[in-house]
Length: 307
Image (cartoon, rainbow, N blue to C red; front, side):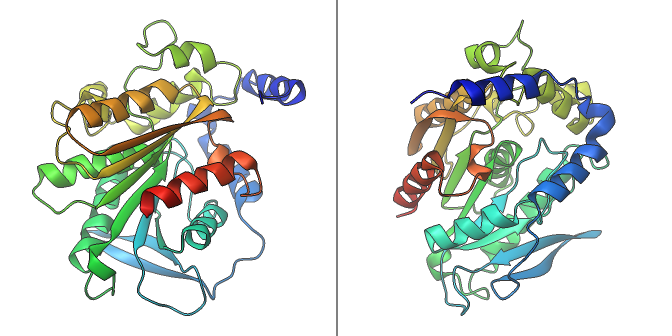
């Protein structure tokens, strides 16, 4: 079933609102805080902690699938938001749903955001939390070091590059990673991008190619970062020895093709990869409530991959 006409018209109208991300990112943060933070938080199944990261501490929130703790596999979740917006509060519902619907403990990471903290600050925070969790798995009562990472959009990017960085630095990597409509490339200009989805879906489906370019410009420290594989993992010369990977893409997403290209590149490098495109979905759909059929389908895929 295709996107109905009313929804398509609304998405097109929202896409043409000339929102200047680079000058109004603080406003976008406030809007998300108001619209995406739940009014009631169930603290009996969510606990806040910090992980030391040298000169600062990284806030993390642990979601339990039930009130009583029991040793379970852990999913470290890295949120989306273009490396610029998003927080533990705006991702509260998603992470709580992920814990309950997979029966896994979910550890959400409140990594530092750009432009106050540019590349690779957020990546450093994510790698520190992943390292800490793996190295302390016995103390944390994680059975058989079943530690997985997952993230959507910019969070999917951070998952992919964290796995590359950990491998390159000689650290143990997570057993599995779930990349949900990840950003993996470095060119999102409709005229020069190698990916058709940038041209097909880059204007009418809320996340525009212009907005992606704006987020990237806020994130990078210098123009040289565009060619850094820890910025755009599709550029990596060596994609071997990566975690078992699930890549989920959305049909009407400008990032669709680069996510699928990364899945194919991982597979070509000898990794176990599952790739699923969700029909009729747009970028960001995974944040919708689970009663939406495409979200339920997504959780079915995730549960099958984790099992």
